[in-house]
Image 1 (cartoon, rainbow, N blue to C red):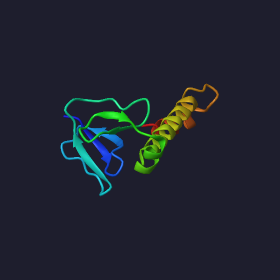
Image 2: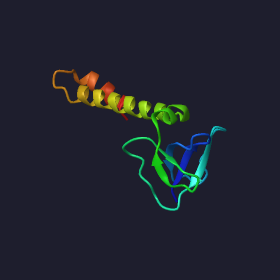
Image 3: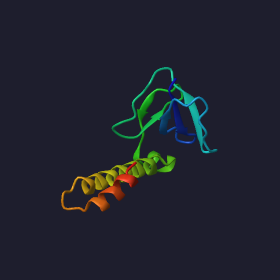
Image 4: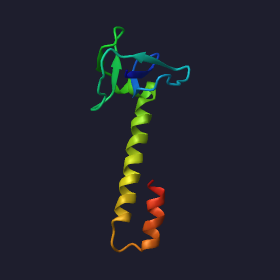
Length: 104
């Protein structure tokens, strides 16, 4: 069953999980969802009856969800840069091997 990890104060969804017993710190809580949801396309929060609605930019910043999104974007950009190096024919094979190891 899907669970939402939400910021307790703002109820902004920071992440989704299917882990049996997710571990969160004191600023967050785990909410069991009746049906799976998608949190793509922006920042979302749960109402008191767990309906998904848009969260404001300010709520996303307060909740830390904005930081999670920035981290995921940076991670994706780094992976893309590594793949460009690996696929560049002008890069030596030893350098490519090094980045293949990093990319695992």
